[in-house]
Length: 88
Image (cartoon, rainbow, N blue to C red; front, side, top):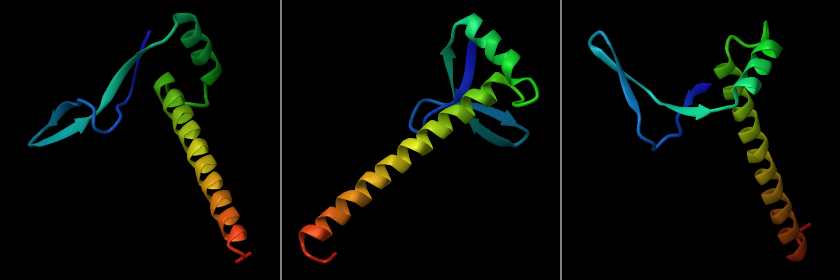
């Protein structure tokens, strides 16, 4: 099964026209095992509108979690530096 996900900024995009306005939707195709997709579709009934929505949500959560970890690491480095300098 091929799943279409929003594309990463800076990558090639495919424009979609709507009347006089041109909308740019950026998507990438991702190949996933059919059995995994079927299991996910069965699980997501009533939780997400589509497999694409589930995968997009999951990836956004992972990215946000990783961003938080980096911020926490940076904060710990700043605090250690302040301790080393005698400020705290």
